[in-house]
Length: 111
Image (cartoon, rainbow, N blue to C red; front, side, top):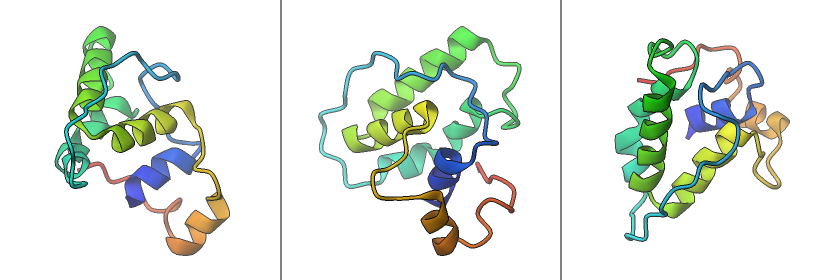
């Protein structure tokens, strides 16, 4: 959750996918909140400096759509908010910093 908040609220984080939600088939399978946890390491593919900066852009976008289709609908919505920079209603950057004091100082951890 910490890294997701960092990617959502850190203006320095640069995504390597288009800044609009792609068309994808929403996963209707009930999820117990663990799929994004298991797929978390894939986020590095979509962020500059994650080790995949030279990946073919079409492949990267295809992997992103696959990730959205694998996770539950609410997690996919959050991932779309991350790339479109839509903040979570009622949650400010200041509140995130208060909850995680070094969140914008420490390096982004995507592993």
